[in-house]
Structures are given as structure tokens and as C-alpha cells.
Amino acid sequence: MLSIRHLAFFEVARQKSFSRAGEELFISQPSVSAHIKALEEQYKTQLFERNGIQIELTAAGKLLYKRLQEVKRIQEDTEFSLSVLHGKEEASGQLSLGASTTAALYILPKVLSAFHKEFPKVDVSLLNRNSEIVLEALLNKEINLGVSEEKGKLTNITYQPFLEDIIIPVCSAASPLARAKSYPLKAMLEMPIAIRERGSGTHEAVKRALARHKIKPEMLHIKVRLGGTEALKNFLLESGSLGFLSTRAIAKELQHGELKALNFEGLRIERTFYFMQRKGESSQLNTQFIKMARRIYNLK
Image (cartoon, rainbow, N blue to C red; front, side, top):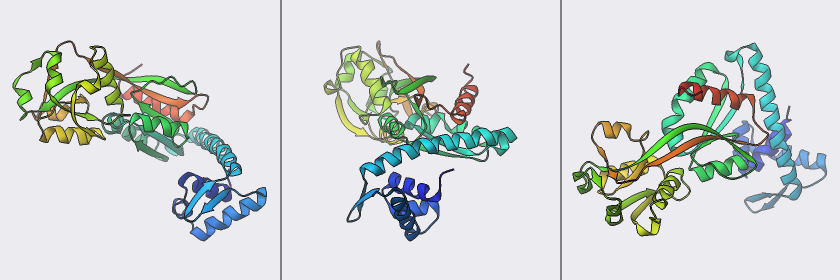
């Protein structure tokens, strides 16, 4: 069990703020400072460098933080494993998730709801960012389980296939582009396009699909880059531009006729969502969540 001193240090190191650490632990800022001072006296070394209002970890502080991340992970996994022996309704723990925006908004909510009903005492947090940031958070041990549509080549990350997805070209029903349902692929080069930001899984999937047809991003008339699926969807609804979105994100808009799917000859954009974990750090809690997600989507 981590002591309050170590927890105070952990939160200050994580948030780079004494006041935010106090808020997280429900203790005063002077109490946080006292715990850090006591820890520095215990280890006979300085753990933070203070430069005005900025604080940074010293070499000793970085070492301690790295070790505490591992200790905290083992502690949380042990607590869950022991508590679940008394039944799922009594199981406690911390499930720290990160997911790309499409997964966070349109795939995981039903899984999170079912998981909460089965494990009501487990605290769940979800980081909703693009694929690049989710991977970075996993590597930095800010989350313990990621869901992304990108399978990278890092040897310290394991990727487990989860769900297939399709991205389609769409435009507003009021757009002049909606007058035709099908176009030759080269016609896209003359159309105004709105696209997701660099680093998003959607952007990478579209780029790969177009590359198979020898179309580079710089050949497109990209008018705007938007961060987030909802931002792009809402922009397309109010503009005449072409965009690319997951069918999971626009099912209602297609059904209600607000957005129109366009067909470009020979273009098909498919991708796979993956569960990502740090190699050698799979936990029982992560395993339970993955099993439930696969069960809900009728996957073996």
C-alpha cells in the first residue's frame, strides 16, 4: 500500500502542481508540501526543482516516479483481484482507459455502461483524444488500456484486434456535391475537402486508402482541418465540403437524410480498432473489460 507521502509525490509529479495534487487527494496544499518535504528528508535527496511557479522532477524524482508508477499498477491490480473474490458487485479498482474520438464517442459508451452495472465499485476514467495522443498517454503510463485504430510497430506495446470499421466520403444533403451519388475518383481532386487533424486514426486511414490510388494529401483541396469527429461532422452539415467519417459516427445523420454518402470509383476505406497495452503489464481488470467489449459486439 502506497503511503500518503508517496501518493502526494505521485500526484505532484503527475500534475506538475501542488495545488492540483491537493485537490486530487482532498488535502490542503500545505499538507502536500509537508509530505514532499518529509519524503525528501527520508530519501536524503531533492525530488523537485522549483523555478518560480514551475516545478520539474530531479533525476532522483524521475526515478522515484517511474518506480511508483509500477508499484501503483501492481497495487491496483492486486486490490481488484482480491476484491473480486467476494463477487463482481464488491470488486474495486481503477480502470484507466484512453480511446480515439470515434471509439470514445460511438463504440465504448455501451461497453462502459454495461461494465459499470457489472462492476459498480470500479472507478473508470476515459481519456478522449486522437490516436497519437492515446498512444503517448499509454507509453507515459497515464492510462493502462488504450483503444485505437492504429497498429504501430512499437515492440513494447501489444495490440489485440477488437472491431472492424468503415469510413465513407460524405457531404451535406444541401451541398452541390450531393446531386450525384457516384463520381470517378479523380473528381475528388477538384472538390473542397474538410479533414481530421494530423495524428488522428481517421486521417491516417484516409491517407493510406488514397495512397493506394496514388493520391497524396497535397493533391487535395483541403479547406480546413478539424480536431475531433463531432467538429468535422458539424462543419460538414453547414458547408458544401466533402469529408470522411466512420459510419458509426454518422448513422443518425445518414438515416435522417442530413448527410449523403458519396461513392468514388474503386475507393474503400477500412480499418481495425485495437486494444493496446504495455507489454507484460496486462491486468485482470483490463482483461475483464476487453472480454465484456468483445461479448457486447458479439466477437469471439
